[in-house]
Each structure stands twice: as structure tokens, then as C-alpha cells.
Image (cartoon, rainbow, N blue to C red; front, side):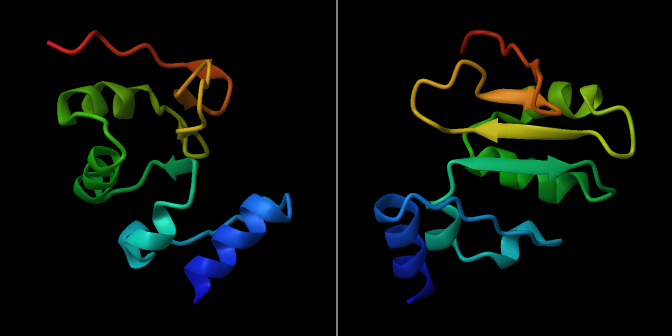
Amino acid sequence: RLDRTLGYVSTHCGLSVIITVQDLLQVKPNIRRLANVHILWKCSDVDTMSTFARRLGVKRKWFTQIYKKIKGYHDFVCFDNTAKSPAPIRINLYSKVELPEDD
């Protein structure tokens, strides 16, 4: 029922729902799919971050380039799946990350 409640309040009540977790894969897929913005902080488990990025549609080779741009301890990467987002991938919300065209 949590997924239905989140879906309802985020679309019909004009609320933004924020979920914070330390293990990204602990959030059930049907709830993750309701989110349109995901923020990942750099952590020691690169494989988990890579898996999550891949589930957001970012290829592994691109994620490696993005991961290298996260310099400081408090820096993060933002994946914005909002329709017509001017910057779908950003570092610290402000620095747009350009990905190469799909080959």
C-alpha cells in the first residue's frame, strides 16, 4: 500500500516525497519507479552505485566517467528523470554532466 499512497500524494496532492536510505536496493522497485529524482553520494561500494545507475539508464562506461567527477566527500550525482529536464545528470545539482551520444 505504500506505493499507492506515495503515488497518490505525489500526483494528486502536490507533495514531494523524499526517501533516504543507505542501501539503495532496499527500496522496493515499485516505489523506486515513482521517484523522478535520485541523488547518490559517493561511497565505497562502487558496484552497488553502478548497478543503481544502470537501472536508471546510465551505461557502465558512462557511470565510470560520472563517478570520477565526484571529488569531495560531500559531493553527489543527481539523476533527474523529470520530463524535459535541461540537465538529466548533474553533479551537486548545479554542474551539468554531458554524456556522449549513444554508439
